[in-house]
Every structure is written in structure tokens, then in C-alpha cells.
Picture 1: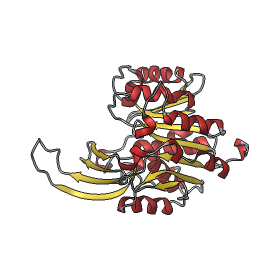
Picture 2 (picture 1 turned 90 degrees about the vertical axis):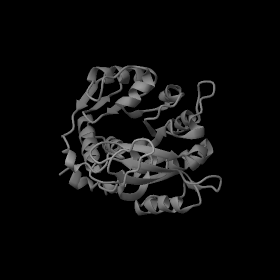
Picture 3 (picture 1 turned 120 degrees about the vertical axis):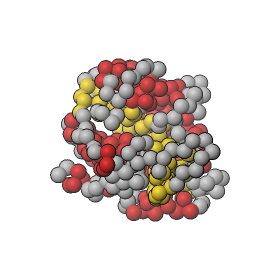
Length: 329
């Protein structure tokens, strides 16, 4: 096994989804019709968005794709994206048991987006499908898993444990830094699935809505620094190493030991926002790149904010993210 200091690269495991993004003129009342003014298709999901954002930085970072897809046209879209990112396809397994996961995203420009999700192969992803040991042998330094609570079988809580927690334990035991991102879903076992994984999470990414659901705390909006800090502290007490909370108003990073850094993003004019799809993943990718390179926390947060802001300018999750030299310029 290579020493951590000699390892390089990030393995991205979890959700691989094809997003069909529909920009609509207004949100309809029940039974009403509204026009779709634009439609674009791209790859989405936690693993996909983080890996493709990192690839868009053009920083030469080795990347590995880990997940499960079907044997359909959506699988071809995913494979084309992974190949274009320069990442290997060896650990992107295919099955004929279900279609590739896909989402119809209804995007109201300047406002928000709503997701209609078909889980497909994501719900079938199992511990044996995740090639932890293979990417360790290849030299990966960071193991990213996302999204927790959108991983089907891996999220099932049995006697306080989950498959996702066991996968993360394997990655930690192999010497990789583990990073996890959550999803904003109102699932009954949301908190239990998070708590099961926390002892095996070195870096936890989540937004303020997810922080509230994972802890049972009330957070009074995107700018509630006190509420977000207390939620982050509770998650850390549950076993997480570092906790990174991102909202439209701020990025809050709680380091091991409880030290808190808050960095606020530059405002993005509403007219420059095409879609918020993937902005949280772009933020995580920026932070992970900085973490991989040994940057100080404020620099990690600033790159995360810049990547997220760039993401807002595109219709798909990663289509508008530029090279690192542009983001840092």
C-alpha cells in the first residue's frame, strides 16, 4: 500500500444519473399546461457531478468513476461523459436488471428547480459493486461517496448499520480520506442513515436543509451561522471528522477540534443564473481539490464558491465550469 503522501487522485462513487433539464416558463397549477422553453441533457448525480467538475478544472488530477449503470442510451451518455473526462471506465459496472437512473429536472430560470427521479440502477448499487481496493491499489488519495440517502440498498439501515457505512469503513481502513455528500430528500430514515455513516466520514458536505434533517435541529435559513454551527458540531460529535456546510449565503467549515471558518461568496446577479443544478456539487469539487492539494481552509472555500458560481451559468450540472486557471484568475 502506498503512503498517503505518495497517493494522488480522487475516486468518485455513488450516483450516476442522466439529467434531462427542462427550462419552463412558469410552474403550473395542477392539471395546467406550461411550455418548455429549452431542453438539454447531461450527466448528473453526486459521483458524476463531482468527477466531471474536477475534470473541468483541467488540473491533471487522476479520477476514477465507480457505480452502476444499465444497458441503455442513458448508460451510453454516462460512459461518454466519463471517457471525455479522462477517467477510467473499469469500475462503472453495467447490468440489465434496471435502466440507468435518470431525472427530469424542471428548472424555472432565476428561481429554483424540481426533480422527478427514476432511481433505476442506483437503487441496485451494492457493496460488492464498489471497487474500493482497486482504486487504492491504483493510488487514489480521496474516496468520495454521494449522495447518501439516494443510494437505495446502501442506505438501508439494519441494526444501526448501512452498506454505505461499511464501504466507507473499507476506504478508511485502506488509508484513503473519505468524503461524503448528502441529498435533500425527505426520507424517513434520513437521519439514521447519516448517523450510521458518520464515524467513517473524514469530510462531510451538506447544505442547511440537510443539516437540519440530519440533526433534528431548527436552522433559520441560509444565513443562520449559529444554527448551522450547532448542527455541524452535533454531526462532528456523532463521528464526522470535518463538516462543510454550503448555502447560498455562506460556506462554513468546521475543522477537527471544532474550529470554524466562514467564507461568504460574491453575489451572483439573478440575470446570470441559468440553473442552480449541480452548484452544491461544484462547491464540493472545489473544496475537495483544495483539500487534495493541501490548501488552507479559506482557499478551499473560495474555490468552492467560485466553482458553484460558474456552475449557475449553465443549464446542466457541469457544462459551465471552466478551467482552474480561470476560476483562480
